[in-house]
Length: 161
Image (cartoon, rainbow, N blue to C red; front, side, top):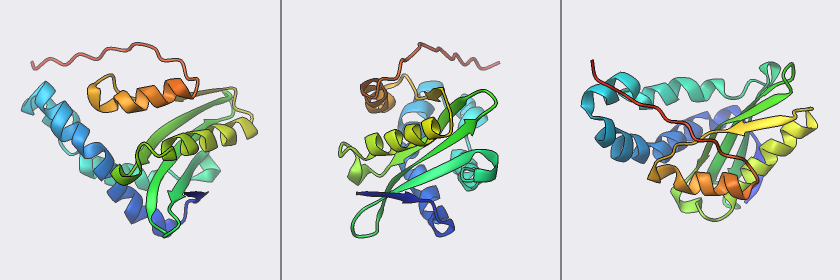
């Protein structure tokens, strides 16, 4: 597994990887949990949301960075995208996505460690990374705790009106 900089040709693959990574959460976890009306309101067009978001993730002039994990065969195994706000000495891993075939193989660990090291080198003092409290996101929570991150409990409630 090699980590390398983002290239513009990666974009379609990153979009597909993001949709493949988070699709099970939206369709198998979130939708059944909140029902159709809330799902449609909150994330009904989640695929298109990612198609719009992913192209904005790499913009170094504005403190936005992406690193890609690539297999020895040249396949995309995952990526991490993070932002840096030097005025606040704060960084945030915005997206961490790893293909199903490469999960549990330390790809996510390497991507996070790379992002944290980059933030540290830029002068960041505190970094954040978020995830859900649901079963789908349990592996992410375990990883972040293993990396020394401190979790806080947050609750979000939805109500149809």
